[in-house]
Length: 372
Image (tube, rainbow, N blue to C red; front, side):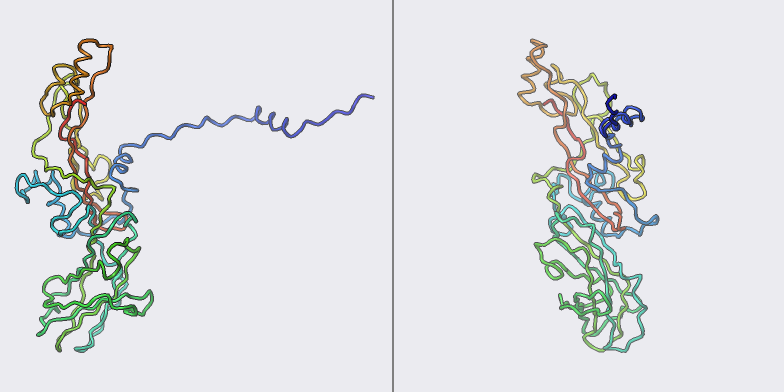
């Protein structure tokens, strides 16, 4: 009798299926990021804005900080600092603290706050304010956390002996003011914004910012007077991100970059304007509308390698390479036309929590080019 036929094993069946079934398309390498994604990465932003379509008004303090800090804004608008002034990097001069990120954070508890009932003198209500700090990264070191309170003008009557503001840690539920007293502060008048420094009181100075901050506020007159009505509460938070900080200061740019010229000319700075509208960011980038990024282009052969308009003195090594290339073209390559001096920009924008954020970025604009 002939021997019994064996069934094909599992490995043979899988091999036949792999040969008969259509093969999947070959995997492709991930595509390089587009212009918008590359610009996001350069600015250190995790994602584009997904907040409200109608953003809130920009606080005046944020406009002042931006116009004081941004070099290109200082050149276009009225000068706010003396000519030749060098702004210290990673420092907010107007506030007198270290930092390169400033956030204006609104009170998230205002929409859910119940209307205040009429109270007799001496029985003024308390308010619970809530600030969302989840956008602050752990690497950022807070240097200022300034609470700002504004009171209704019609009820901001002067008390004979002023007011006393007390701030406590509020509980999650209805037990506002159940935590310890963080600080007490005398308030002489309510006609101007009331400010209180929370850094060192709400959390330690050397610690990262919490994910959220819930506070209970009480404002009581030192003598019988009408109770005040809280109109607005906000938090101005300044942090220092060491990843965006450079130790050496750079002067403000005053000279325009050299424009024009063919690619075959001498190494020089070429004009390149980056428009936030072209990348679709104009709805959430408040200012500037764009910035002069510029780039370097040109030859570094002799005599262009020795000097050129809009450039800096080349390194001795670059001159030596140019001389060697002129004497023996095959001995070595020419030096390259690269940035020799860069300067910073500041960007004012809305984040995904609709906070107004001012961030300062070093080395974003090419001011001078040279052969290296």
